[in-house]
Image (cartoon, rainbow, N blue to C red):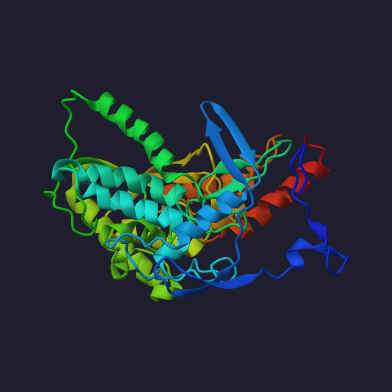
Length: 426
């Protein structure tokens, strides 16, 4: 690693063999340690590399000292609170043999110090009056999954003299090669300010909000009692929510029933067929509670045509049709949208009403794709990811199946862009 500016080297000079070694070709060192509950754990070897701190408003950093190392040894001898969960992680699609080596239980996602800290905070919550316990659990756990585990990381930005401290990646259970141990007590204290400000904003409000923590397949609402629905359903195989949510749910002592999770998941033996059937039952329930002239907005995202067809079948069989479509522009793309080989930029927005869907065009899905690409290629650089979202919306507006995956659509868009360049379009 080089500094001023900070730069991560791709190779290093080995003092042992005196050769230049490519870092990606190196095999990670492993070791067997005793975990937080005294059980042997084979894991990647991690060493304290840098200590960061703050004095007043001034930040500082330094190499670790013998005192720092001695403190870690003392922490290693401390037992976690009796209430700390010694729970197995139920792995599914997100497990990676490389960076999840030795991660078998919840506490393996934490340094021992941070596991003890969270366990202690959750135990202290029970000493408060019952009227505020749930709010305090929400405060602790809203910080926990994003900032307390080994998934917390640093990123390197061009021209910076130091790493930028950030949170865990959303939508995955990724542990980087440079994990960070944050100060949980300070973090929860800072997090509490957002809660305090929110409660101040809402204090004195006469509005009423009712939350039903139930399945969308059976809502405790009267038939034809809802004017408007906004829903953001699971996007097929895009994010395995139950697998990710374990990091918080285990602390609560109650995990998602995966048999009812609406998802495409090989580990759960759920194909697009099962996913579509479960989506269908939800849309039928939405149709039941929605007033005859009510409407529903659906936000959806997929790069796979079969997922879009499953969605369309689910809402049409429930008695819905698309009245209008648009694209939701996000300020920041998700991690999967950034790293995926084929992804979609902007989530299509569908406005549904309770009427029978009809095919309003004789054009095929391929012809609609060509029209969308041509209509938006008049002298501007094409954005295939956004165009695919617009293509999907247009197909569903016209009652046509989405028969083209994002990958095929991108190839069509790139071919059109090459034709534009051949004609000298700037």
